[in-house]
Amino acid sequence: MKFRPVLVSLSLITSISAANGGEIDLTHTDGLTPHNAVIEVVDFKGKAALKASISDEARKALAEARRQRQAGEPANRVNHLVIVEEDFQDGTIELELAGAPAPGAFGGARGFVGVAFRVQPDLETYDCIYFRPTNGRAQDQERRNHSVQYVSHPDYPWFKLRKDTPSRYETYVDLQPATWTKVKIVVEGEKALLYAHGNEQPTLIVNDLKTGADASGAVALWFEGSTIAHYANLKIAK
Image (cartoon, rainbow, N blue to C red):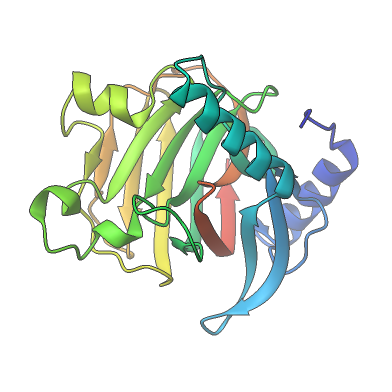
């Protein structure tokens, strides 16, 4: 799916942010741009929320990518994003999110859900912090240690960072699938701090964002194709 200009949507988002002190309304889909995603507004666990799941086109692309990998061919990455703000470099992103494996998802599904930032127009290049909710209370310490993850696509996926620098870009946080988690991400230059559950101390510290100190781009709600994701109460302060 090609990137679609959203100048009208950006104007709407800007007016919403100005009116509500940085709040972006997720109780309707106006001004939001899904990529490989289907979005709708629902009531989830007592909150009006944006629900995101994989699109039919993306499902076909994922099947083709699996075929390519099995055949030993280069496989394209399929990114699932909902663009909510077009212009972001440094600032604070706050929201509540919840993720759970979709019905019939593969055994390794974890309910992957998070936030991408400094997203480039190709929708392939961005920094991202995401959660693996089924790991949060797993009866295995190693899985618990992989509850939250920083990545930078396309050059620094999770498996490269885990292999090259074990434990530096992921850690434990208490999580449950399909359960609201309060999240705050503070981005400044090459540094990002993740705060979870309203805690005063960061859960994850990234001192070397791979996009670099001067990068800028969009903010997007992020999820993996095996996930049903929900988002609410989004605020972006730049």
